[in-house]
Length: 83
Image 1 (tube, rainbow, N blue to C red):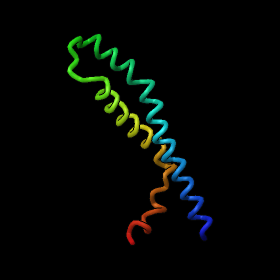
Image 2: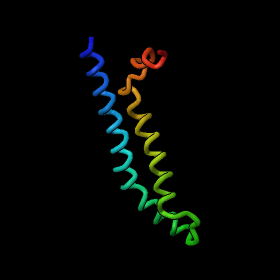
Image 3: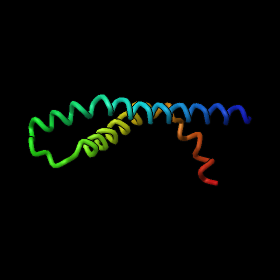
């Protein structure tokens, strides 16, 4: 019984690590070119790079979560949160 919970826990930890590191890596690849593109269209861009990166990171995090949502098995944890 304990092995099942332990395996599910480590599977969830792996998925969270994929979410976090995947978001950081993909955002680091996408944000600079997006910022340069925005600067070319709007030379007086009112946002600093950090703000653009934050928005890109949020979009990427949602995309990674949606693409990998079946791997989270959130239904397994429903009873744990009811207690």
